[in-house]
Amino acid sequence: MGKRGTDVAREAADIVLLDDSFISIVRGIELGRRIFVNLRKALIFITATHIPIAGLALIPLLLGAPPLLYPIHIILLELAIDPVCALVFEAEPSAPNSMKQPPRDRKLSLFGRREFLLSVLQGGVILGGVLSIYLSMLHWAFPVDEARGAAFCALILSNLTLAFAESAEAGTRFFDKRRIVFWTILGVVLLILVAIFILPRLADLFQMAQPPRSMLLVAALAAIVLGGWYGIGKQIAWMGGISQRRPIGNSR
Image (tube, rainbow, N blue to C red; front, top):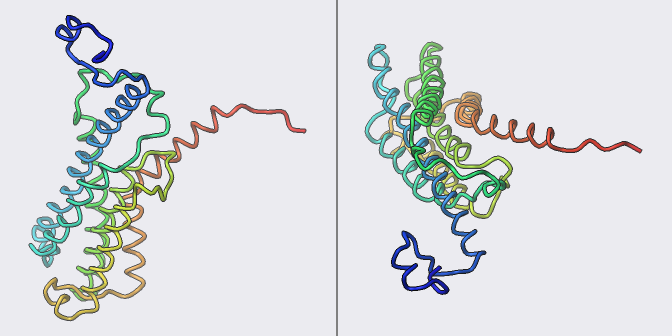
């Protein structure tokens, strides 16, 4: 203890607490756990989102299809991904039961094999889904610009959905005030997409055209599934655990 400890104890200690209050110690432990968890989530998200970006830039060319992503598309994706990593994951609140968990192993890696495989799985699902939308629209003789527009919408919305699904802990409120950053980024990205479709100069710059409303709806629903399946699974597992722990009372 920094205030009540002796000089000899402070010199020999590895850590000296400047605040001896037990409440401050508990809050410091909770903050440390939240930082560790959010850093791990951010690393998983970064790895997962770059898998579809790399795959969608390369695979269509290998298949002989028109390019899906150009440098300007990748720039816009990075402008959406970087704020999400820097702001959304940092502001994400702790899980409701974070302080009920036992201390983690000191040898536990921040980004180990399990986290890498999870990020590959999440990124691979988005890659496969968006590529299917793009190739299917080309197969159905949609114009290339419309197919690119639908696929790009599905890609960027699935990345944002993945950010929310990866960062949000099961049991926390959907519209938590600390998630205002995420909703702000989502709103800005949607405005940019609308501007690209309705402004001819931007449409020409991005080489995209507004697809039919039915395909936009398909792209939006696909984005929710492709990016949110893991978060939905976490929520279902959490609700199942709550129902199992809930005592069964006698009905009257």
